[in-house]
Length: 433
Image (cartoon, rainbow, N blue to C red; front, top):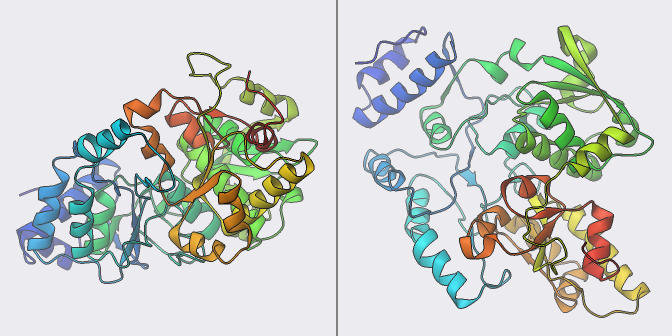
């Protein structure tokens, strides 16, 4: 039997000793070992039990996951509050594939998808056709913890949003650890769970002449601070107070870029994010470091991105917008810009098939907008998938895709463009060089 270094309550020790069965004893041991590695003094109870899990895809190579899930089900483990998942990997209706690509997706990559989703339902996934999205915290999806809530989540962009914009408390958990914590109702008390762990060791000072692209600003911060906590000064003059929809979208995208281009799990924005509004520069640690970001620094970061295509002048196969998933306001804004751009240039079709990705709940709301059908008519589509999972197909991976997502650029061969550049390309006003 594992001897914990941390101090456990009698109830926690009893679970570790097997009072609730062998399966929960093993799960507790995993959580305790995890905490011991990071010198956690104890396990703390979750105050918000609806979770979000990263492992949403029935990837055939994840062989240990499926018998593990069967064991959880057999032991009667269930998350009564329910949970949300990262996006599904495929949507052949809205993100087209040729027959060979479909074969690879269905037989060689995600052959366990249907089986795995049934397992997830058995442990508490509700409304499976709706609860797959990386932006679970949006009001349409309604998995939104409050400030100070202790949660057990994974998915880097969801965790950094929950910590930073909502003020909840969660470490960057891996898949399965999130599930174990949610079932048992505990998480180790270290890192972002603690007051000290939420203090910033970097002061990021913004000195730009205009509002920076969220994706490039997040990228610059992530590559500089890596896994440390930044306190960002000067961004508030470009953002309205939360819960403004444009601010939500901006912080979502900035955080995702910082989490993927670095490993940021928490940031503070002076006068905007909840802890920064309350504590201001008291959130800075002693001997903090400074990073000044001006126009030249943002341009340097942007120009540093490698182009992974075999030829720079290839015609893009598709454009992906929405990694993380788009908000409703982003879908509305992009559709307005696309339709206005086509009208101004007397065009009827986009030059590049453009795929917008969003939560099923957000898509359901957007269907009420007259622009929904118009987007399909001009050569765009809207999907619930994870574009990263789609581009993981080896037959798809090498094709020329473009995006305004720094996260998608980081993990795939997709080529990144700023919003206005991407708009010009998909409208046919600018060629890729």
